[in-house]
Length: 441
Image 1 (cartoon, rainbow, N blue to C red):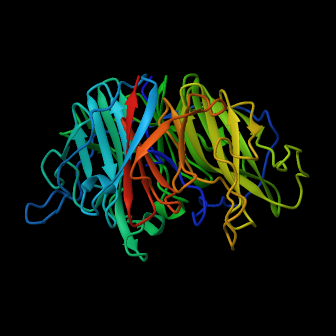
Image 2: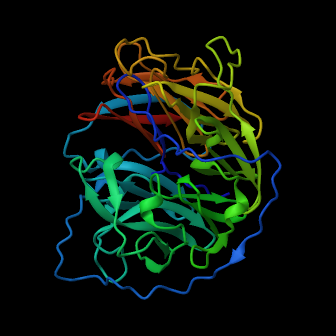
């Protein structure tokens, strides 16, 4: 099954002391479980005639090539992690998501309001993709998602808008003069633009659109209140899903592909001032079942009263045999929540964040969250943390974890920003980045 590795950008979840919880959901109102399912309306999009064409005079500076250790096979069992500190100038420090596909690998990075792209045939030698050519992305576009389809790769792009935080991704806005676009490629090196899915104006998005690959094809969705959905089998022709697919009052945070279709999480407004975390399932991305509750529980696992405090799910981390939904308590700075499910329907709370455990640090916005980072790529999950009590664990379902032997230059305790690679993991404290090379068995 083709899988999207994303954070949306790789499936990336940050946690630990000093980390920032994901975006909160926008309150709206709810309808009961079991609401009528919707069917898609065909809105097939023709190829896009560029309204903003590439300009040969525009200088586009791209990061250089880099090398990584040759990754083990996708199904190999990781046995050890060897850490090494990367130079601040190493282009690998810019990587934010990686997709392993049948033609090799593609990586997308973040560099001050731009998204550099690299491709690799073997997962070891990575060549940058030039922008502003006749067969690649136009300058000023952000690559916000990449997925695999039968004929190659599909990417979604948006026009970069102003950024008031020195290029930090959390503050990135999107322009409106160029619409959301889809691009297709047979090899990751040459790309053709097409009219993208209709996900509404970018001013209404909570964050960048998400793109998930499931057995029936692709699903693109806007985030936040009143999410808009569209499906496609090839990334060229998109079918808009009617707005009734989800209940009124749902703010979608994330969607991933699963072996049975798709899973979505977010927050559902159940009263004028109260939201709860919920999940939904779909076989085809058009008809959805749910909502399925993600309960708020105490540290001992007791379900707490569902009135008063509002909470929501903000991200999904996927592995071969299970999912972990990550969430927040909206009124509690730093308050983090985890739930696990085998398929996206029945969820169990993980109040102690196994295998990481809760943070032990003190201070505002520090307690009540996992003591480390959690990432996944659809094949495996990796939980990790730095410092003297550091460690790395892997899991195929989010319940049973195996600790790996660790050697090398260990990351600092403040390193909580993680990116999962085909052959290891990156961990950063925002200034310094470490590469953990995985050895399989």
